Amino acid sequence: MANTIATPTWTARQLLVVASNKARFVGAITKKLSDDFVVEGTKVGATVSLRLPPRFTTTKGQAIQQQAIVDVTVPVTITDQAQIAWGYSSFSATLEIQDIEERCINPAGIQLANTYDADGLSRVYQDVFSVEGTPGTVPNVNSTYLNAAARLTNFAAPSGPRRAVINAIMRATIANANLSLFNPQKDIAELWREGMFSGPALSFDAWYEDVNVFPHTVGPLGGTPLVNGASQTGSSLITDGWTAAAATRLKKGDVFTVASVFAVNPQNYRSTTQLQQFVVTADTASDGSGNATIPIYPPIITSGAYQTVDSSPADNAALTIVGAANTVTPQGLGFHPQAFVMASANLVKPSVGESRNVRMKDIGLSVRYWLASDIMSDQHPSRLDGIYGFKTVRPEFAVRFAS
Image (cartoon, rainbow, N blue to C red; front, top):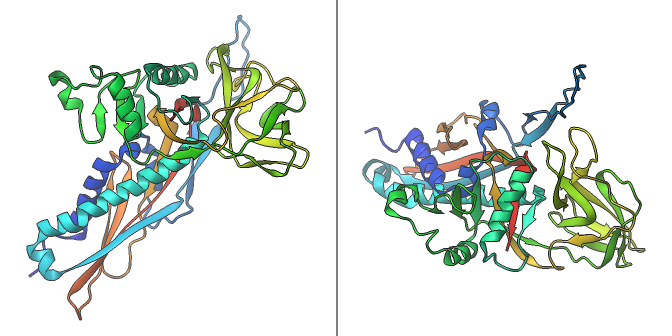
């Protein structure tokens, strides 16, 4: 008798339903780009470009002053393939469908979502240059999160929706400091769901607890780093004053400020009165004389539509690293969904067995469920595959919560 329930289509859909309910971070970011990958047979390594809106400056007076339209594109690449496999008999598929759902589908969906979330959170935080809080100390005052939201506003992030993803200790600490604020009243009870511990609070529209919040380890540092040479601009900064030995000083994802270099608002180009924070984009070592060239984001741009700072660093301006050497600090995130993109795609259809790509556009995930059969044992080995990639497309729309 043909099985009409545990089909590849049914199984894949059930898996995605479970995954979507568990994907905290993935559920809160942008997935609209995924439609560009909906081509049967996409493979790891496929790339498309996301075009960002151009930026302009205002001119005054009656005479027209045309500005160049600069297209800025960000490549988004499918980088990973994740799979989970199991098997069951014809008897189980026909008569024990509930058992299959509980024993196989639910655990697989949970694990798939955890993999997506963990990969995303471990990667994108390293692109974010804004940080609030003290590495090594769990935030326990509202001002950490309120100041983080203010940073988003200063960088022209849309006012809503804004999401916050933090770990269990961070959640417990700030919730304990705001027992009434985070206490769900009857009239907002519908806002609560698994993994979401309150509605709007502290300038964020939704808060999520996620065990996959990634711990960053501050670099070994050493010495008293200074800017080496005035009037520097661009995506790297020449420095000296590090401990005089060839060794790694900064890790990718470290953040620092430079004395008297202030951030500017990208709309009015005025100083925000906050020192511009720069994120290190690759591990950086000093040489035997204590010199180091640091790759940074954002680039130092002092004028024009893409201006980032009010001035370039002075020679011998001091660098201040966020966090003490080798401090381990979980990196929560506050962000607008446009800050990050996850791309997912349909895999190639196998030539043997039954398979089905199922896609849930509301969460931007696609999985292929592949069912084969062994005539000798009446077993049906099955595998679930998903391919995906993450990209930080608007890092200014995100802020890290150091803990």
